[in-house]
Length: 272
Image (cartoon, helix red, strand yellow):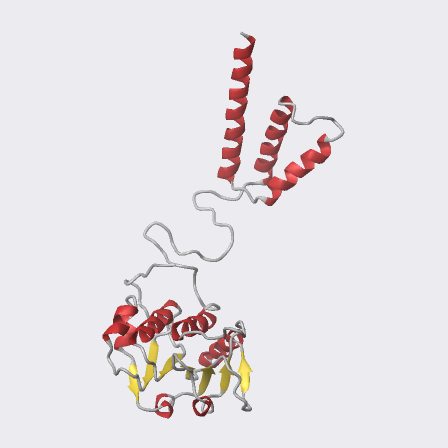
């Protein structure tokens, strides 16, 4: 899914801080920034980046999320990066053998919204590409976040992990779905979309069904009177489930009328 409205203010209010611990590749820092931008995360902290900072490859990979990288802060140690935080979550796929709460991304999203809503500072820790966070680093966090992934292939790269956590943080407060365009506003929620029309009324649907029944009768579709009631029920049920719009009902009636005209014309031509 693509699309960025660069005219909009990119910061959406207080949000969790994303802390990348000893990232190895600039590309991964950039794609993490892109994932942050998708879900209203705007503060990145980087602990001991292997290839130094700033990193040209990070900016190239960020797909325009430059403001996050331009404002990113670099720290020598993890304790320094999280010194002003009130609550810290460590993301990992592996069991760690330590007494610490383990929660899912869904639970993490709820917890972060609750804490930030009352003015706390919250951080999410993401580890190295090759082996994640160390036990010592995780011991500094308040809780562990582990996603329900395939245990036979549980590794998630940095950008994927940021995207997953960012989505769970943002989904309850997102004002719309997707992107607005010059022609149409962003979608205000899931469900049947009916631009330029509206859901059909029952009167319009029943008018269509009566029209269809008349023409099917005329075409000899109902082989016997005994079977006709059951066949009509199936037809009505089919179209009742379809959630037709007013425009679709009119199109269906037009299709029936066109087929009827062709059928009648052929009958006349066959009688000449």
